[in-house]
Length: 635
Image (cartoon, rainbow, N blue to C red; front, side):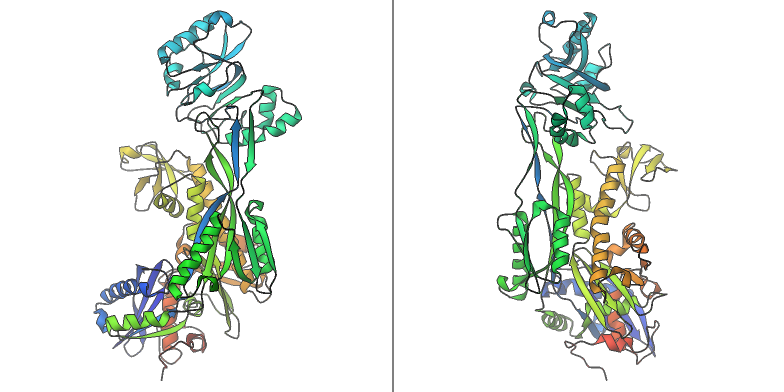
């Protein structure tokens, strides 16, 4: 019996399909192992051998029993991501615009003049509404006693600003319900004698403040003119989503949103046209220029900017892989996405953060200098097994995808991985066109991490892959859609009240961040839509003979990201408006959207000359299977 292994070296994983010739070919095993090194380089060999060993073990043979190994022509593709923040909120003269401590006290909205808790009560007239400031030197019990005493003397106390984490302690000891914001570290910087407003949302209601985050609410509270209301917009915007906030109106202070120079891109088309665009013009303008100049010859970033550093880094990596000079390596695509990232407010008095405008960028460089023969030689030397480079990756993916029940030519595939979104289209004459675009799973992870302010990439990856839920009691959790599941056994007490990742089989992992289920879900879905839905439409348009997404009738989604619990649904919904039948692939009716390329390699080798346990249209396997790099010619 002959054993033949088809191997797909991808950006993130290496897949194997193993077939056996026993009076007819049949698939006997598949395997998956993490790709070692950059795709398409000799460093892939350890991962290839590990994947082969796994497949051999499943087939109950030794890896030495494999008679022939087939490789795809895996062109090195480097995808990288970067973030450029293009706005910043700046406060002058110590104007405090907002604060969101974990445990504010009281509830409601209060406005008044700022006075120190240690001030002389006699100096405060009964007509004045006041906001008291409680420095760290004043004990919470003394502060509460003073507030009660002032109230007994008919002083209208509307709220409190506290330096230490004492809001709840003070609130529990006073006789009236007022909003109290605490943990204001630089309380000495708050100007006394100025009008201020304090707002705290109802605890446990899931609601946020609504007056101070509304520019017209601020205008009402501080009697602002239309010009002043326009200037206060950065303040209200910075407070959206807060559960508590303080706004102080000072005569000299100001809050403004500044634009940060974020560098520029120079986009050069293959027809010689070029354009320079500043990144602070936003993602839509950048992508419009990419579309107008497509196909792209090269993209250059301004030196000293994040994007300039990212593009330079990608060129250097590819130069090291292929031995080419950096100047000979071109960036062939870039994807830009508008996003918001939390940034510390410059000049703040309580470490406030504001959601600033930013642009996330993914770039891709691909080379035609293929070191594939080096990989084949290295595997052959280590295993003493004949290795052939059997076919172009896109062709093999098309061939493997055709084993999905219900497919036939012409049709298109979307191969969605971690670093890039690839697409291929085969017409009725078995001619195949393909494309590689920047932006896929890694970019989604970056956007989730940035918008939620996470430093932990593994956590961001988990938030991308799994749904979340809130543990409401020891025996119940509330899901993202609002439904409640009652459990037979109590959850781990450490997860009580926490937002958790639902990893399947009942496993729950606390997220450990102070964000609601709703915000996490919204952030995750927006990131996936911005990257995958946008790239699906771009890719299908680029491979269409008419440069129109509507041209396609059938699309099959394959690759790692096609396994995601919501990405295929999002893309299917988006393409449904074009009348496109789009769904997740099911390679050989057994492997789902995985193993398309490895399966295609095996089909290509066997061609149309032998019996197989799966079938593709007559003549197709041999038509798309062989490349100029093929070292083995079938007899």
